[in-house]
Length: 339
Ligand code: DAH
Image 1 (cartoon, helix red, strand yellow):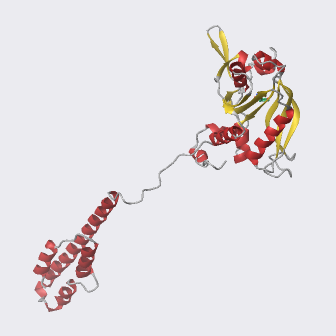
Image 2 (cartoon, helix red, strand yellow):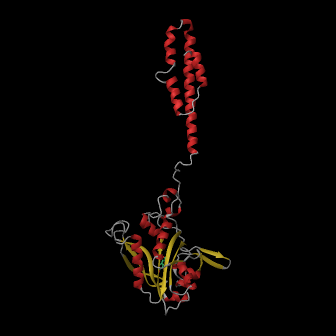
Image 3 (cartoon, protein in one colour):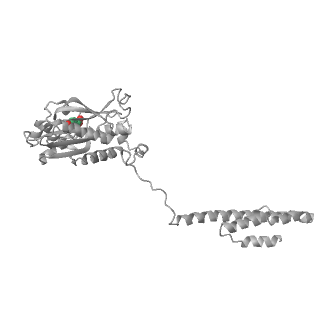
C-alpha cells in the first residue's frame, strides 16, 4: 500500500471497542506494522525526493499514534460511564456511623436491669433544691450544696440547679408511684469542676431504686453481683465497703474485682485488685417519708454509678475529655455489640 492509500485509510478508521483498538495498534504501531515497508523503501527513492518521502511516512506514523491515543482515552471514559450506569453492580460499602461508647454502655446497663424487672424513668436536668437535695436528706449546710460543686440558675425569685446526680429522679418516681417500685434512671449530671482528664463539668449516671415490702441488704448485694457479672463477666466478684450518703442508711461503696489483672494487682486497680464502680445503700426512712411512702411498711435499696467510669473500665479510655470532644477518630472505634 502506498502513502496516499494508508493516509486515506487512517482518516476513515473506526475504533469502537477494545478489539478494534487492538487491531488498529497491531496494523499501524505493532512490530510488523504496515509502515515498515514504506520505511524500508526509502533506500530506493531518488535522493532528491527522500526528504519529502521521509516526512510523509513520519507524518503517517504520528497520525496513527494520535488516533490510537485519542481512541484509547475515549474508550476508557465510555467504559467508566457504562459502569456507573450499571445498576446490577454491587454497591460500594455505605459509610455507617458508630455508636457513642456511653450510649453502648447505657444500653447494656438498661437491658441488664430490664431482664430482672426494672423499668426506665427519666427526670429533668434543671432541678429544684427539693428534688436534688432536700428530699434526699441533705442537711441545709451540706457541702454538696456549695457553690463550688453545683451550678445554680436563678429564674425570677426562684433558684434552680443543674442536677448534680440522677438520685433526683428517684424522688420524682417515689412522689408519683407507690411500691413496688423497680426503676433505673439514666441521665446527664453537672458539677462545677475544672475540666481535666479525670474530671468534667458534666458526666452521666445511672440511678437504681427498688422499694417493696421486706427488701433487704441481701437483695441489694445479690442484685449488684448479678449486674457486675453480666457486665464484666461471670468471674467478677464484688465487695462492699461502708460509706456515707445522706439518702441511704447504711451506705456502701461497691468495688468489683479488677477485670484487667484478674485481681493480681495492676496500675489501674492501684495494686489493690479492686475497682470502685458505684455507691449504694438502703433508702433512708427520711427519704421514703419525704416522698410520701410509708417507711413502716416499705424498705428499699438504691445505687448510683457513673457511665464514664464503667466505659473507662470496659474500653480502657482513661481521659474523660474524649467522651465529649466528638473526635471521629475516637468515636468510630466503637461498634454495637462490642461492649
Ligand atoms: N448520688 C451519688 C453520687 O452522685 C451516687 C449514689 C450513691 C446513688 C448511693 C445512690 C446511692 O442511689 O444509694 O455520687
